[in-house]
Image 1 (tube, rainbow, N blue to C red):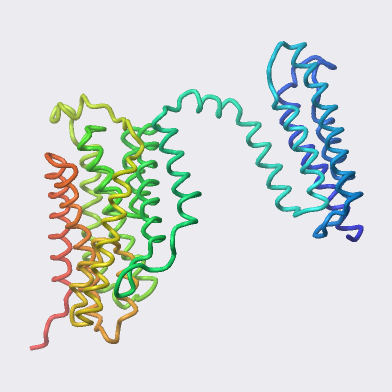
Image 2 (spheres, one colour):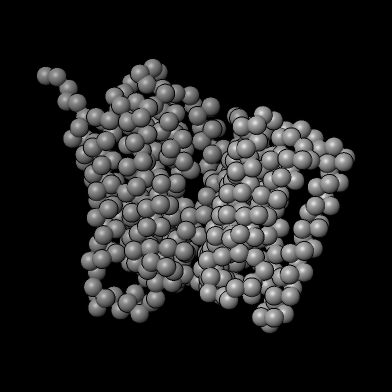
Length: 433
């Protein structure tokens, strides 16, 4: 390690100590001199001490020698014992119980050492993260005091789905005609759970505006997931039907725009045939979202007015897994249709595939033009997939949400389909006479 690199690393170790010490010193700034164990100076020296010890014991990227490892262990244990003894005396004097200061001091020492023998960026990022956690004490304590068991349980389930189950999911396709990738299906389940959790958080903290925000953000990923989540909540009477309908409508509007963006990025020549229909459908869906979210008067819907805009459960694991299985079946069926019937049944294949994923079939169709598909056939297939996805929302509303929610979703979907069909027919090239 050259002198310049060593100086940079020593400066980083000192900077980490100053950063953490600044937060600790600011928090105890009103304490009388001599009444606290560690402030900005002590933390800065702790980071520097760890850095000097790291410089003595080894070089970056090399394995520690036995003597270096022993020296490092003895140095850390000695430092930890000194800090713990002083913090224990401070807690007794103040009649408090807190291990935050000694743990923060030990971390500062360790990060100072790691800055000399490890990755500088990781050490710096860890120091910033530690300072942020220490500074957010009141916010974190307030959040823990307000969190409910269903919220905590759902968060843990979501983390388990992502961090435990996803890495062990098989990546090899299962089934005929290329099959279905279990890992991809599980990722879809995680997306649905995230959309549901996002809707819950948005509604809890932002009310009516939160429903639109959650729907819009969910629509960037999967408008079908937003529809299933809203239908489930409508069936469980978890929130006003107006807000739930508005969430589905805004998610659909975002989905239409999303397809326009994909086509524009991959095959701009198809925009003339697809963009007018999708834009009209998006504007109409956005109008429905605004109508249900803001324009309806409470007096016109007494049941909804009395119902609080609150969700009782972030998401249901059963519905999430059920949706993933449904999509796996649809994906397998679309592969069978495509492989069995060939390019002559492209539109039928797009209709089936659109029940599961509009983005994937749109990308595939843009790659099939100008050969073997003409621009007109590719545009019809893309719009057929979008129409299939829109019709599926009617089925979801009827099967899960039922009642007035199903009727409203059917009205929104039908209006979007009619508007899109009219715009597409208007943009079709007229035959020459």
